[in-house]
Image (cartoon, rainbow, N blue to C red; front, side, top):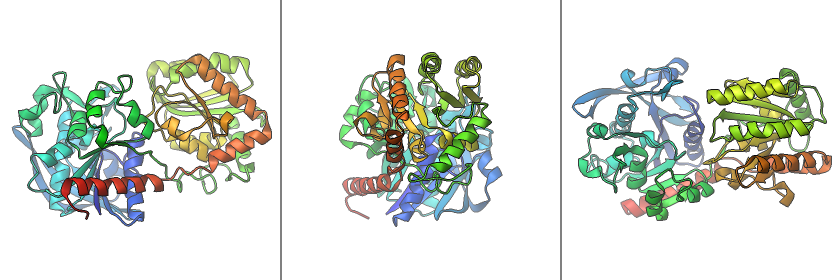
Length: 483
């Protein structure tokens, strides 16, 4: 089966969040399972600066309303056997950031990703990829299913589309006067099409026009059809319920592997945690915390935002750190007010809490490896990768029961691999941490929970198999035969 993965970011080339991990990892997993998968994304400045690329000598024009923009196709040396293609347009993509500066989104993001979506299809035609399925990710590629059913229906009549929602909160909403940029008729600007309260909603285009819609965990698939989590699109999603699937993300278990990881102080595995003790001591030393094997160390690696439950955690810190012998290391960046609040807390609990503002891959590895437990009290979480990485490294998760967290973490008091709280409140979070602390005090029980966490299967194998089955069913249903 020929699969083209279209995404605005993908590892190892450009990453701002979990979308990049999914797009890059799926392409590799498909190749390992014998599928003909390839990847296409914008040629950002950071990609040009850090990877060896080759121009393919293919140039074409993409109409954007009354003007046209030129696209060129580049390729990179195959990453783990996957051909990667890049759409060059320096006016749109030769910028420091992918989507916007720290001050806000780029004002021309509608033009940038309308251009990219149409350029993906033009590139597929010129590269003669003949994809059976184009797998589109988030609002930046959400027009592709509409294009396949309208402008390019005759040119790619045997290509099906799958659209994946990674986070429904980010929808690509733009004013209605951007509609002519799409090149599709105003007949699609309706409540049944891409109109949303008088605006264009690109995410809605993907939901309405894709042959199959997926999201990144089974629980999140159910949640987004409710008013509480539907972000205004719950009715649209209910209309697609027969073509909506939740497929849990995975992680790269070769990269995230404490038994072989050269970026941590000592390697270890579920049957010998002596190396983890060394990692904990090193993290305590690095963060100015008292070196103590008996004191539980909790870690946080997160965007500092309300969605991630950081304000809830900050409110709980008074009780958690004030009443209990526990240490806390926070790594992340985001909302300026939350950054300041976490720094203030680190000052109040000096020697017991450390806050590192900014994101560092290297330090993230050290936090996962050094922490005894991992706090992830997200208000909502489509899937979440951090809890899977934490478990892989033996940091027992404490999570809010929502989205992918509910699908991957089960209550240790019931024989599971972590600690789960229902109800988004300080009291429920504190109670979950206290259950974890009680378990930590029982060495034999804690070792069993850690082993349960570390030995779970968090790889992409199962997810990739589900996607391939979905592609085949989608292709057979929409095109009429199996490739």
